[in-house]
Image 1 (spheres, rainbow, N blue to C red):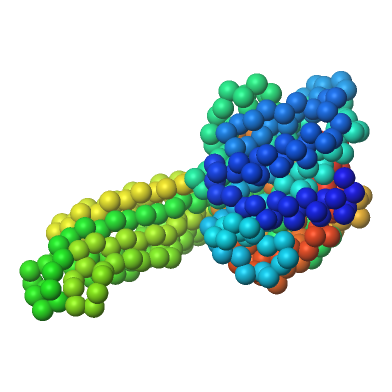
Image 2: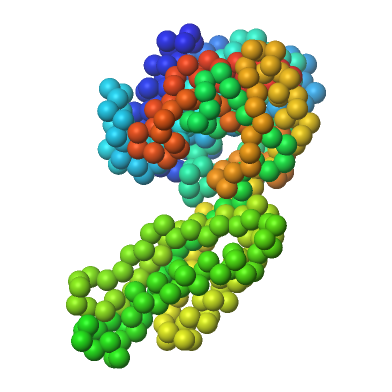
Length: 371
């Protein structure tokens, strides 16, 4: 595909964002685009709503894997683009449409000019939730290929086009969703002594949570607990019988995540006793840290430099990415790709610069050839 065709493909993908494990249209379009390529050395295998695409090498001694995520987000798009989402409540607000397009471009290049080693392209569903990497990694289908190394990219709105960024060691944090349901006893606002007010309970709980970070976590370590949503009550003169908190936990170390959860559950026991209520906790989707191997990061910096792409050292971030599960088992790395957008990831107006597609394909194919 030339650049015009790649841009057209990206726009097609942008119009059909689908949530995790619902990527049926996306999977079908990916298969259609792959079937238009030279299929002589390509093997396509479906896995749920994702794909494994295997390119046989000329004289294989190992298998290199490259992953692209494919799902969208439950965000109403506000870009005003002609090719905006046709699914009114969903949007590719994290750049997965670019991720897929770059993977398709690299796949076509490698299939037409195969290297000695095998290459496995992974089109992974449900990165945004409930999490596709861990079950994909554990599948018998994936295990059949015995992957030796793996890498992936993520768009970076704050970086200019023509720039990539990575670092040795921790790139993304350990993350966990957090859902808390409070149940007490509702009643009339005039008789609070006859009720168990879950707005008061949940509000106090939010404040108490922050003491886990300030008093239970080593100040030289890092952790974040964020409650982003609170739902409670029906009308102004009825005391709320139930409340719900939704948030996330983020840490730099896996052990710190366990400390926070242990402390949180101790607080829950105390609140149930003091406030005479029931609190149920659900950790939802949990992602393991993205930790890069220095050998691959250093090699990547050299490789992209030869391609005229600028490499800059990244900072560790508290963002989460389930690619960490792949890196937990297989050596490799992840990198940021600059797309020069004034709006950040998960923003309803995110509009990456499409010139980054060519940069991404060049970086990916060059690294595949060097791994």
